[in-house]
Length: 141
Image (cartoon, rainbow, N blue to C red; front, top):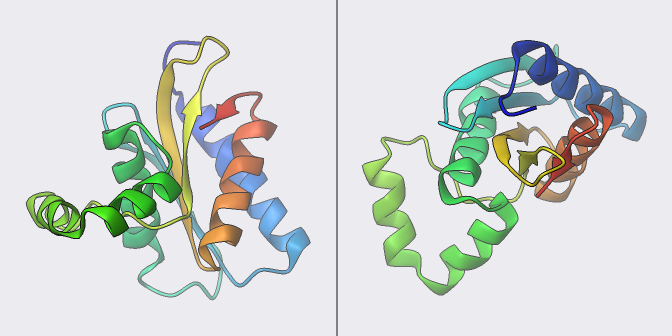
């Protein structure tokens, strides 16, 4: 597979939300973007706040744009806050370096996109993203 289809994006989201429900997390929003940062799919559980889309997409968009998980971006932002504030401003609010998004890679390691979640802690968000990617038979990074 060399590109991320809508069917796979929806499969990732569905599996992430199953993992969230099994774990008893608060209502989540999950966004999948392709390798160019374009939104492929989004779902918001009943009861999720209005900010879930923007946060989930911002985490995923930042991850795919920088080629690393949003956990790594958060660490980098701590070491270089001025750069990351400038980057967020230049991205018109679409860049969010907070834990909760992972890259989506094929078996050859090619980045197909990223998935981000919002609704729980960063660790909870990241865990459901990883579960969604694994359920689709892909690799998270």
